[in-house]
Image (cartoon, rainbow, N blue to C red; front, top):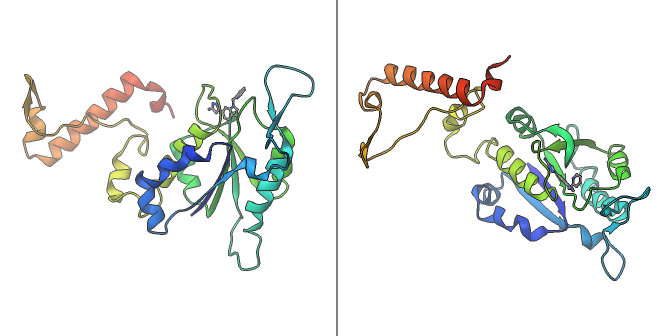
Amino acid sequence: MRIDIVTIFPEFFDVLDISLLGKARQAGIIDLGVHNLRDATTDRHRTVDDTPYGGGAGMVMKPEPWGEILDGILASDSEPDAVEGDGPLVIFPSPAGDVFTQAMARELSNEEHLVFGCGRYEGIDQRVFDHTATRARVRLVSLGDYVLNGGEVAVMAMIEAIGRLIPGVVGNPHSLVEESHEDGLLEAPSYTKPASWRGLEVPPILLSGNHGAIAAWRREQQLERTRRVRPDLLQP
Ligand code: JCE
Protein backbone atom coordinates (compact mmCIF):
# COMPACT_ATOMS: atom_id res chain seq x y z
CA MET A 1 0.00 0.00 0.00
CA ARG A 2 1.15 3.52 -0.88
CA ILE A 3 0.37 6.19 1.78
CA ASP A 4 0.92 9.92 1.21
CA ILE A 5 0.44 12.50 3.97
CA VAL A 6 0.15 16.27 3.44
CA THR A 7 0.82 18.38 6.55
CA ILE A 8 2.47 21.59 7.76
CA PHE A 9 4.12 19.44 10.50
CA PRO A 10 6.00 16.67 8.63
CA GLU A 11 8.24 15.97 11.68
CA PHE A 12 5.14 14.84 13.52
CA PHE A 13 5.24 11.63 11.44
CA ASP A 14 8.92 10.83 12.11
CA VAL A 15 7.72 8.39 14.79
CA LEU A 16 6.34 6.11 12.04
CA ASP A 17 9.97 5.11 11.33
CA ILE A 18 10.38 3.49 14.77
CA SER A 19 6.84 2.20 15.41
CA LEU A 20 5.23 -1.04 14.30
CA LEU A 21 4.91 0.34 10.80
CA GLY A 22 8.65 0.95 10.45
CA LYS A 23 9.15 -2.79 9.89
CA ALA A 24 6.37 -2.87 7.28
CA ARG A 25 8.06 0.00 5.45
CA GLN A 26 11.46 -1.73 5.51
CA ALA A 27 9.81 -4.91 4.18
CA GLY A 28 8.24 -2.90 1.33
CA ILE A 29 4.65 -3.60 2.46
CA ILE A 30 3.92 0.08 3.11
CA ASP A 31 5.44 2.88 1.02
CA LEU A 32 5.08 6.19 2.93
CA GLY A 33 5.52 9.73 1.63
CA VAL A 34 5.22 12.76 3.95
CA HIS A 35 4.83 16.12 2.16
CA ASN A 36 5.22 19.60 3.66
CA LEU A 37 2.33 21.76 2.42
CA ARG A 38 4.58 24.84 2.75
CA ASP A 39 6.81 23.43 -0.03
CA ALA A 40 3.89 24.13 -2.39
CA THR A 41 3.71 27.84 -1.48
CA THR A 42 5.27 30.58 -3.63
CA ASP A 43 5.52 33.59 -1.30
CA ARG A 44 8.48 34.54 0.89
CA HIS A 45 6.60 33.70 4.12
CA ARG A 46 5.35 30.29 2.85
CA THR A 47 1.78 31.29 3.76
CA VAL A 48 -0.83 28.50 3.98
CA ASP A 49 -3.70 30.39 5.69
CA ASP A 50 -5.83 33.50 5.28
CA THR A 51 -8.84 35.21 6.89
CA PRO A 52 -12.29 33.67 6.31
CA TYR A 53 -14.71 35.18 3.76
CA GLY A 54 -17.87 36.22 5.57
CA GLY A 55 -15.91 36.93 8.74
CA GLY A 56 -15.49 34.89 11.88
CA ALA A 57 -12.74 33.84 14.24
CA GLY A 58 -9.49 32.19 13.20
CA MET A 59 -7.92 31.43 9.84
CA VAL A 60 -8.71 29.08 6.94
CA MET A 61 -6.22 27.13 4.84
CA LYS A 62 -5.78 28.66 1.37
CA PRO A 63 -6.69 26.44 -1.60
CA GLU A 64 -3.67 27.09 -3.89
CA PRO A 65 -0.95 25.15 -1.98
CA TRP A 66 -3.36 22.23 -1.55
CA GLY A 67 -4.14 22.21 -5.28
CA GLU A 68 -0.46 22.26 -6.21
CA ILE A 69 0.63 19.53 -3.81
CA LEU A 70 -2.33 17.22 -4.59
CA ASP A 71 -1.68 17.69 -8.35
CA GLY A 72 1.75 16.15 -7.82
CA ILE A 73 0.62 13.31 -5.57
CA LEU A 74 -2.41 12.33 -7.67
CA ALA A 75 -0.46 12.56 -10.97
CA SER A 76 1.73 9.59 -9.98
CA ASP A 77 -1.37 7.36 -10.13
CA SER A 78 -2.49 8.39 -13.61
CA GLU A 79 0.82 7.50 -15.32
CA PRO A 80 0.36 4.86 -18.07
CA ASP A 81 2.18 2.13 -16.12
CA ALA A 82 0.10 2.66 -12.97
CA VAL A 83 -1.92 -0.53 -12.51
CA GLU A 84 -4.87 0.70 -10.51
CA GLY A 85 -8.39 -0.26 -9.54
CA ASP A 86 -10.28 2.80 -8.39
CA GLY A 87 -7.26 5.10 -8.09
CA PRO A 88 -6.26 6.90 -4.91
CA LEU A 89 -8.63 7.59 -2.02
CA VAL A 90 -8.08 11.03 -0.46
CA ILE A 91 -9.01 11.28 3.22
CA PHE A 92 -9.39 14.58 5.07
CA PRO A 93 -9.78 14.27 8.86
CA SER A 94 -12.64 16.52 9.91
CA PRO A 95 -15.08 16.74 12.82
CA ALA A 96 -17.73 16.90 10.04
CA GLY A 97 -16.73 13.50 8.59
CA ASP A 98 -18.03 9.94 8.93
CA VAL A 99 -16.86 8.47 12.24
CA PHE A 100 -13.81 6.18 11.92
CA THR A 101 -14.55 2.60 12.98
CA GLN A 102 -12.84 -0.80 12.89
CA ALA A 103 -15.07 -1.67 9.90
CA MET A 104 -13.83 1.45 8.09
CA ALA A 105 -10.21 0.58 8.99
CA ARG A 106 -10.73 -2.85 7.39
CA GLU A 107 -12.20 -1.31 4.21
CA LEU A 108 -9.34 1.18 3.97
CA SER A 109 -6.73 -1.56 4.50
CA ASN A 110 -7.77 -2.96 1.08
CA GLU A 111 -6.93 0.28 -0.76
CA GLU A 112 -3.89 0.49 -3.04
CA HIS A 113 -3.21 4.21 -2.42
CA LEU A 114 -4.36 6.40 0.48
CA VAL A 115 -3.70 10.15 0.61
CA PHE A 116 -4.26 11.95 3.94
CA GLY A 117 -4.70 15.73 4.02
CA CYS A 118 -4.11 17.25 7.45
CA GLY A 119 -5.95 20.51 8.03
CA ARG A 120 -5.08 23.07 10.72
CA TYR A 121 -6.58 26.35 11.97
CA GLU A 122 -10.37 26.42 11.37
CA GLY A 123 -10.06 23.98 8.47
CA ILE A 124 -9.50 23.98 4.70
CA ASP A 125 -11.23 26.07 1.98
CA GLN A 126 -14.25 23.97 0.86
CA ARG A 127 -13.16 24.16 -2.80
CA VAL A 128 -10.17 21.90 -2.04
CA PHE A 129 -12.59 19.04 -1.21
CA ASP A 130 -14.86 19.88 -4.16
CA HIS A 131 -12.02 20.10 -6.69
CA THR A 132 -10.23 16.98 -5.41
CA ALA A 133 -13.52 15.08 -5.73
CA THR A 134 -13.49 15.76 -9.50
CA ARG A 135 -10.21 13.79 -9.81
CA ALA A 136 -10.30 11.20 -7.01
CA ARG A 137 -12.54 9.59 -4.42
CA VAL A 138 -12.67 11.87 -1.35
CA ARG A 139 -13.80 11.06 2.19
CA LEU A 140 -14.07 13.27 5.26
CA VAL A 141 -13.40 11.13 8.33
CA SER A 142 -13.74 12.04 12.02
CA LEU A 143 -11.78 10.23 14.69
CA GLY A 144 -14.65 10.72 17.13
CA ASP A 145 -16.94 13.26 18.72
CA TYR A 146 -14.34 15.64 20.05
CA VAL A 147 -12.40 18.48 18.44
CA LEU A 148 -8.68 18.26 17.73
CA ASN A 149 -6.42 21.17 16.74
CA GLY A 150 -5.67 19.59 13.37
CA GLY A 151 -5.74 16.40 11.36
CA GLU A 152 -2.31 15.03 12.31
CA VAL A 153 -3.28 13.09 15.44
CA ALA A 154 -6.32 11.66 13.65
CA VAL A 155 -4.16 10.50 10.70
CA MET A 156 -1.65 8.87 13.03
CA ALA A 157 -4.44 6.90 14.73
CA MET A 158 -6.01 5.90 11.42
CA ILE A 159 -2.67 4.74 9.96
CA GLU A 160 -2.02 2.61 13.03
CA ALA A 161 -5.47 1.01 12.86
CA ILE A 162 -5.29 0.46 9.07
CA GLY A 163 -1.62 -0.58 8.92
CA ARG A 164 -1.94 -3.44 11.39
CA LEU A 165 -4.69 -5.00 9.22
CA ILE A 166 -2.38 -5.28 6.20
CA PRO A 167 -0.99 -8.85 5.97
CA GLY A 168 2.62 -8.96 7.19
CA VAL A 169 2.43 -5.86 9.41
CA VAL A 170 1.36 -7.62 12.60
CA GLY A 171 3.36 -10.78 13.30
CA ASN A 172 0.55 -13.11 14.31
CA PRO A 173 -2.63 -12.76 12.17
CA HIS A 174 -4.58 -14.87 14.70
CA SER A 175 -4.16 -12.14 17.33
CA LEU A 176 -6.13 -9.71 15.14
CA VAL A 177 -9.46 -11.54 15.14
CA GLU A 178 -9.32 -12.16 18.89
CA GLU A 179 -9.05 -8.46 19.68
CA SER A 180 -11.69 -5.95 20.65
CA HIS A 181 -14.12 -4.78 17.97
CA GLU A 182 -13.32 -7.42 15.33
CA ASP A 183 -16.06 -9.62 16.81
CA GLY A 184 -18.04 -6.66 18.14
CA LEU A 185 -17.20 -7.42 21.80
CA LEU A 186 -14.64 -6.05 24.22
CA GLU A 187 -11.72 -8.29 25.20
CA ALA A 188 -11.67 -10.54 28.26
CA PRO A 189 -9.12 -9.48 30.93
CA SER A 190 -5.56 -10.77 30.47
CA TYR A 191 -3.13 -12.19 33.05
CA THR A 192 0.47 -13.37 33.10
CA LYS A 193 2.92 -14.66 35.74
CA PRO A 194 3.15 -14.57 38.71
CA ALA A 195 -0.09 -16.42 39.62
CA SER A 196 -0.22 -14.50 42.90
CA TRP A 197 0.81 -10.82 43.04
CA ARG A 198 0.37 -8.45 46.00
CA GLY A 199 -2.42 -10.65 47.33
CA LEU A 200 -4.27 -10.69 43.99
CA GLU A 201 -4.79 -14.11 42.35
CA VAL A 202 -5.14 -15.04 38.69
CA PRO A 203 -8.64 -16.59 38.18
CA PRO A 204 -8.05 -20.35 38.85
CA ILE A 205 -9.87 -21.38 35.66
CA LEU A 206 -6.97 -19.92 33.63
CA LEU A 207 -4.55 -22.30 35.44
CA SER A 208 -6.82 -25.35 34.97
CA GLY A 209 -5.55 -26.43 31.54
CA ASN A 210 -9.20 -26.99 30.50
CA HIS A 211 -9.21 -25.13 27.19
CA GLY A 212 -12.97 -25.50 26.62
CA ALA A 213 -13.78 -24.11 30.06
CA ILE A 214 -11.28 -21.27 29.55
CA ALA A 215 -12.84 -20.30 26.20
CA ALA A 216 -16.34 -20.33 27.77
CA TRP A 217 -15.13 -18.21 30.74
CA ARG A 218 -13.49 -15.68 28.42
CA ARG A 219 -16.66 -15.41 26.32
CA GLU A 220 -18.72 -14.75 29.46
CA GLN A 221 -16.20 -12.10 30.58
CA GLN A 222 -16.43 -10.46 27.16
CA LEU A 223 -20.23 -10.36 27.29
CA GLU A 224 -20.34 -9.10 30.89
CA ARG A 225 -17.79 -6.36 30.19
CA THR A 226 -19.51 -5.28 26.99
CA ARG A 227 -22.96 -5.16 28.72
CA ARG A 228 -21.47 -3.08 31.55
CA VAL A 229 -19.13 -0.68 29.68
CA ARG A 230 -20.39 -0.57 26.07
CA PRO A 231 -24.00 -1.78 25.87
CA ASP A 232 -24.25 0.16 22.58
CA LEU A 233 -22.03 -2.50 20.95
CA LEU A 234 -24.63 -5.21 21.69
CA GLN A 235 -27.41 -3.42 19.77
CA PRO A 236 -27.84 -4.75 16.20
C1 JCE B 1 -9.44 20.08 12.71
C2 JCE B 1 -11.12 22.70 13.91
C3 JCE B 1 -13.35 22.29 13.40
C4 JCE B 1 -12.75 24.42 14.16
C5 JCE B 1 -8.39 20.95 10.90
C6 JCE B 1 -10.01 19.14 13.53
C7 JCE B 1 -11.12 15.61 13.72
N1 JCE B 1 -12.37 14.00 15.12
C8 JCE B 1 -11.78 15.17 14.86
N2 JCE B 1 -11.78 16.12 15.72
N3 JCE B 1 -11.15 17.15 15.19
C9 JCE B 1 -10.74 16.88 13.96
C10 JCE B 1 -10.05 17.82 13.12
C11 JCE B 1 -9.48 17.46 11.91
C12 JCE B 1 -8.87 18.42 11.08
C13 JCE B 1 -8.87 19.75 11.49
N4 JCE B 1 -9.31 21.45 12.87
C14 JCE B 1 -9.71 22.19 14.01
N5 JCE B 1 -12.07 21.86 13.47
C15 JCE B 1 -13.71 23.55 13.73
C16 JCE B 1 -11.43 23.98 14.26
C17 JCE B 1 -8.69 21.97 11.79
